[in-house]
Image 1 (cartoon, rainbow, N blue to C red):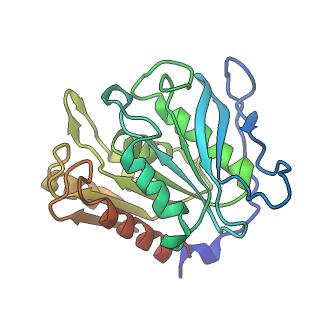
Image 2: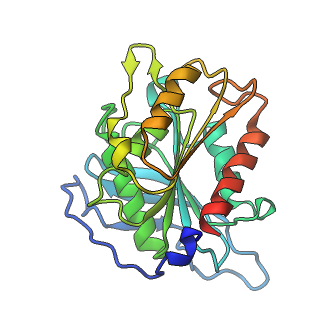
Length: 262
């Protein structure tokens, strides 16, 4: 049975107290307000700047509004900030389009945000504590939409998204995970995923079979170690950045989510 049929909308969230530097972690600032008045005949805004609080301070985000009857909301996490990653990364943008553009059949609200120390987000890059940034973004989505959530991450963002969802006390409303270009080794950074054996929600591992940061054999081992349900998809000829393969990436991501949640 698709898991969307087992979802209870309006699920209340348990919000832990964070020690943010400014306002409490559950404070929400939206510019403009999602339901602000507009002149007669003017189309509603589809893209909103949002700020929310995490342990490192204020985090900067962009929200693409979805259909009023959307069945879930989505979060997309960007690649490593020290490599130039931010919420405007092309893979992050195209993942958002697969989730938000009505042409792809989902049209759900999507939040992208900058990790601490990136763009207008406060704090400094840590490399591990960004998991807390993901949790703050998940909390914001829960409060804003009262819908189940899909968490998507690209590269470093995929690592942080996966780690956040092994924290069952903070991510109970996440119903599916998609890891795009999950890295195994990038420069002097090595990533290990022993916790995936305990993550029981549906998981998609979507990478190119020429990903320079994830040899195919090693990525297969990571996927094999993860608890079911899961799926590994390797796009032929695609590199880590899905160069020339962004449309197939969108097709796989949107198709998989339709199977899981629609």
